[in-house]
Amino acid sequence: MKTWKEVSVHTGQEIDEDAPTNAVGGGAIAGVGVDHPDYPGSGEPGKKKKKNTLIDGRSKAYKEHRRRLEAARIKRQEAARKSKFVEDIVDNISEFGIEEHIDETV
Image (cartoon, rainbow, N blue to C red; front, side):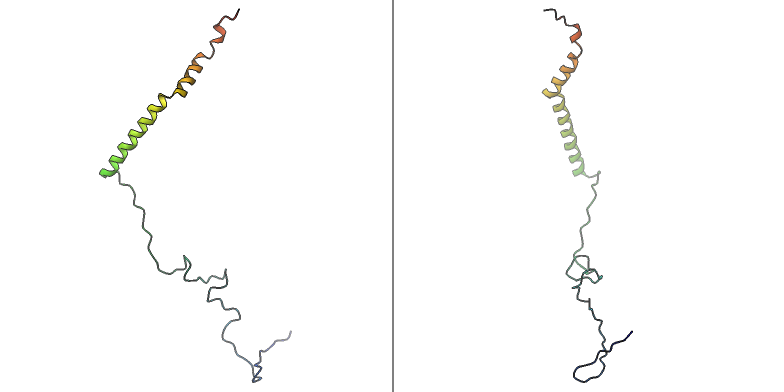
């Protein structure tokens, strides 16, 4: 196998290169692990994210919120009980099976 030497055209002497053939330090080549500083997650310090605070059940605001939730739940349950649709279903179920007692000799 032959080894090749890079020779300068102007001087005819061998060139000693310091840089690699493919420089990836600028981030222009994808998938080599060098991040561009403008992209998120590149390790650059930036704005800190705000942590979500947990709801404290002891606070006055949450107790009022819980009362409103419970009132809405009761209202929904009462509306479901008074629903015409539910009443029709209950009537149909209660009349189911009466056919055998009705005399149809007309």
